[in-house]
Length: 90
Image 1 (tube, helix red, strand yellow):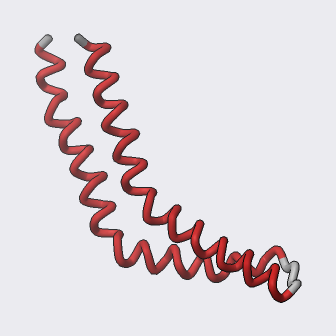
Image 2 (cartoon, rainbow, N blue to C red; image 1 turned 90 degrees about the vertical axis):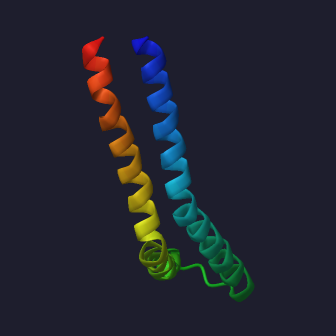
């Protein structure tokens, strides 16, 4: 029983991580791709050029989706903590 619980919790944690990280990763990917195309077109090969736009975009995504991310993570924690007493009784 404990091994199936661990597998279920692990699956739930991995899915929550994927779900909450997706907006950040997608925005970073799109901004990086746009900057790469811009660098290719203009022949500017500055390595630090992508840092500031990615940073600002990720901060904007955190501001927009931060409460949703925290609700998902805290919901997962509450779900896991609510299951602990049932595990102790076994």
